[in-house]
Length: 269
Image (cartoon, rainbow, N blue to C red):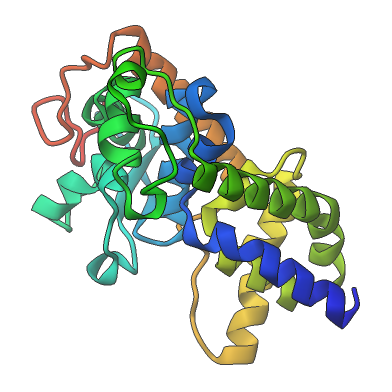
């Protein structure tokens, strides 16, 4: 990739560097956006930013049972310095009360679902009020009542910029990952969780970013970057889907606030 092409890519990526994946998705799909996708990519973006991370614990509830591996979510390396946006707090509120707790992965997903307020509440009260999206959506009484989400001219301009950026990244990123690890890492650090919105991007390539590229970054900069929250992104995505479907099937009423008798904090449920 030539210098001018790289500069063009940088310019196109600028819009994605300013938006979280949930914000990007709302601009792209407006009323067609699924709550499940908004919550899923918000969660994975927080992992990528190391605001939270996953950890696995091997436990044997009693001597008769075989030991099992349980996946927990805990505060990440960047927790203390991270400033969450309103739509991210749905996952982070338990950790704001105590940053030393560990919560079962599936319970964190349920907590996020319960705190979202449903699709309309999450979009209108948590996403559309974001400073990044001010002026992007029409907000008339009729639109609000019927939950119509329409873009303003400013929103239409942002939509065009997002589409151009995503189209170019989908076309060029796989080759960049294989040929220029440093550049691929730079892209990841720039667009963060928006990388999950790219179609047909092999999770094996993401693992290359998460493993080889982080090691490369550490060698070049002398920094221990970690691995972005335990980034087997294919597994995290599948686990989120199954946990969300379970929460959704009961209307989000799991009886678990994350730190109650259900064992959400440190339990084996």
